[in-house]
Image (cartoon, rainbow, N blue to C red):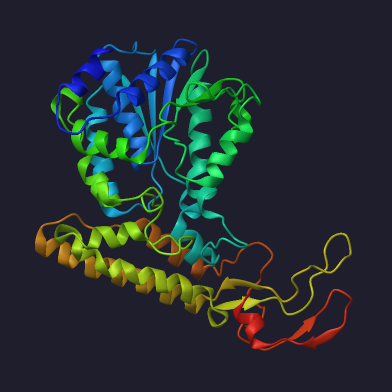
Length: 412
């Protein structure tokens, strides 16, 4: 048994699974020596934070050799729940104390950020049916670009560590199962892939490994709440992160969270957990963002195509008179609403001496106003289209016309 596992089990009380730790070490040791450099894709969430803090500890404890460079890329989406962002910034301070770690905070270009894209360009909030644009735009693409840039300056290959686990998502579990045996993927010791599908410009130079693949959510809580905060394991400020998810009381389904009042989720249980805590109760106004997302999707706040669209092939598009972007009036109202929520939260934060909320910062607000003043619309829209609340005739695929019912507009 390794020194790390010995130390864990010497603590008494509730213990991290010996088998889980041993499997993680075996997974890391199996592939660690095949790559000169190691990188960690860190979202600030529970799983990637567990992976990050554990691996830094394993290196410092001598269980893993220090690589030529350890790169840590933090996906700064500007949409994190406040306790998660506070925890991330405290962890970043500790990472910067280690001169052998190359740290980079990765943020999407200004015009691609969540609220700038919605309010500046008028793109409606993402939804699960037709317009799920957010994850790739504010997280995946910026991280891929940062990885490619880092690899351009090094010799050899890099091993990318992720916090992916089985059991967190049925869709993800299916993707893991289908990938095993393809493109050099192995699933015996973690989930190891020699090809990163999204990173076309760095294929062959980057492999990925998920050494926590087998960890149950209770083991994540053990590490984040009990062990990682202790000085002998790094003294990481991770307990607040576990509490944000509900900690020991969170089941796997509810122990996941994305952006602040994510418009793709049925409900944001993490926000509910947080505002139920006395120290974070002042964040309650952020719950109003969910209603704002719904409001921005309504026909009255948007424009629509006036008639059937003809494709390059000459055929009529399948969704004639489709609803499109937000009007300028809707964008300004939504921005005022978000800024008011932010103001109210921060006034109470200042009164209590608590961390402030930063949903739309000064740079983003200025850019939104600039794009609106320039009458910016998404590609393919001029702003001369009619209001989506107007009752129009429906143009069918065969060119025939029939009345378009209001329920059709609402359901778009």
